[in-house]
Image (tube, rainbow, N blue to C red; front, side, top):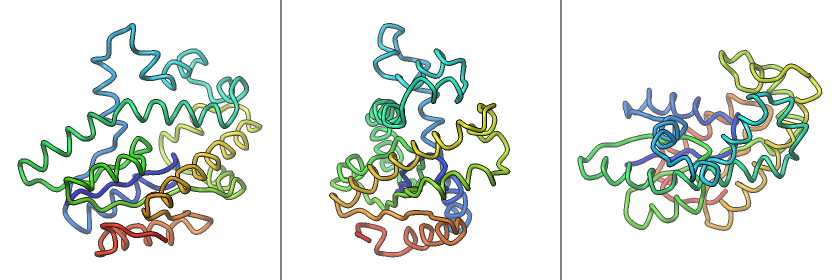
Length: 216
């Protein structure tokens, strides 16, 4: 079985993966790690096309303040989606190889879209869930309450006025993920204000038979 956890950044995907891994004894990996490996082997003349978010990050000196003052929430969301698509072939190959050796794996990351999950379900045993934070106010509160070490929002933001802009991006990102998941009869959970409850729902769903394919 392969467990796929997709959705917006900062919606608990890593927490869900770690918890599920501990309960099932199945290894997990972040698609961010796969992205880092793949990006090292991309020709320089193709990098801007395949990793547009990475290019913008460099242009804005890794600063959320600069990035979110220059680009809108919808524009940044689009950068994420375009960069995610770059990894699809690598993710398919990863699952193909692990399936051949009869390994189970948990993959989590924003690079996993509903479209790819449906494609993989045609060949492999897949359980999936998508998570988001569609309420921008709740997303902002989660940012302000974060104590996560190395949090990319906190470490790359100096101006507190940038936080609502990031929360708005997370909201529109979540909305699009929910819409695409519902179109394909895939399960979506809005983490909401009660983070622990949302994580628990996602873990229990992935452990259930309904995790194979289900709509909320």
